[in-house]
Image 1: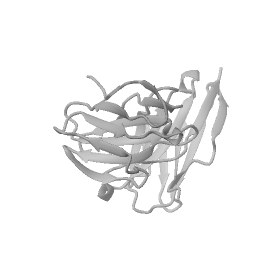
Image 2: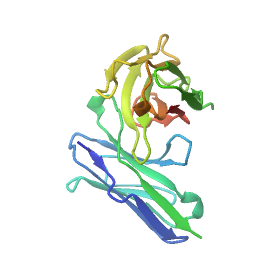
Image 3: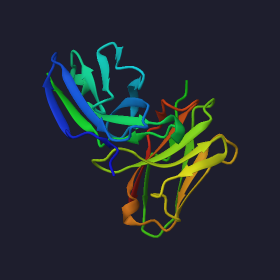
Image 4: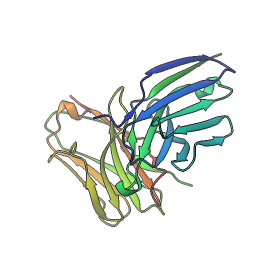
Length: 113
Length: 112
């Protein structure tokens, strides 16, 4: 029972273009969503988050959009840079579940110079 | 600002041996989580502490796994009688009030 799904295992984009990473969830109790970035042999690093009371959050080149009715969120990276190449994980939590994060399976992003 | 620290970074063991991993969370964080990640998958929740109390354990955590956080600071995760299926990266994370978790670099376990 996969509550958080990232259906694209990989994505390749040209440097300077937009990267769009998608995530779907099934549990309507989730009220907080996060994106983490992971390099090989390192732990996940927090990137950006959004509360369920918002539909958009922006931080520099990174924007997360939340569509609650569709149970869908996306991460936009503009412009993409080669240093953004990593695995991106979508995660969700509910306040009544001790904030434990439920992760998707990740999307490997490659930004080509 | 010292982040979450995990020791060792790598552990190779033979099947049937016991192993123990240590996690030192960010000092002011009262919540501590253990996750496991295998290749091609996202991190999977194992267990969670608030201060020294272990408040939740995943059904993934078999009887061979035990975690402690004796004084509400560092935590240990022990795996007894390791099996090849235990090979994974074991991640520790901490937080102050929940929501955003800060992860350590993980312990990569290989069971031969």
